[in-house]
Image (cartoon, rainbow, N blue to C red; front, side, top):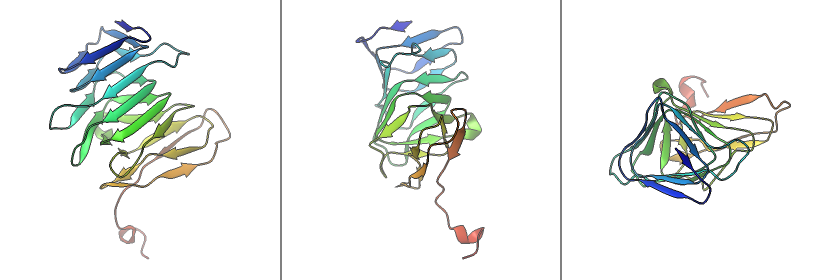
Length: 184
């Protein structure tokens, strides 16, 4: 399935891309329920038009899961929830803008979740109410501010521009008393 530029698709029920499925999103897709990717989910290389909206309409956490990596260009996370609004247990990469408008994204690494910003990837609207809980990886040689937090607190961390395009750095904020490991 190919979503062409300027086309808009909405998925009200649970979305599952089977292992044999190939989805190229160069338009706009809205997911209102759980997202499962076991096939190819990507955008056309060298384009900047793929846009995905996760805005769950259920009272529970919206799951972003699957056995195959998901490649996104621009993404909007928008779901009010007490605690994490999104449970990410899929390998995901982001090349454009991640709009953390509303809702915490919990990266469940033990279940296979990862949140990777590619060269040129950025985030906006990050706050106490909307950030990434768990590890975030940044690839490339641009300076970057991580959209990380924990326990309802956004606590950004920044890196300067790495020397090489091939470099990759991971950051995570953990809300805990440091005195337990490093006595004050």
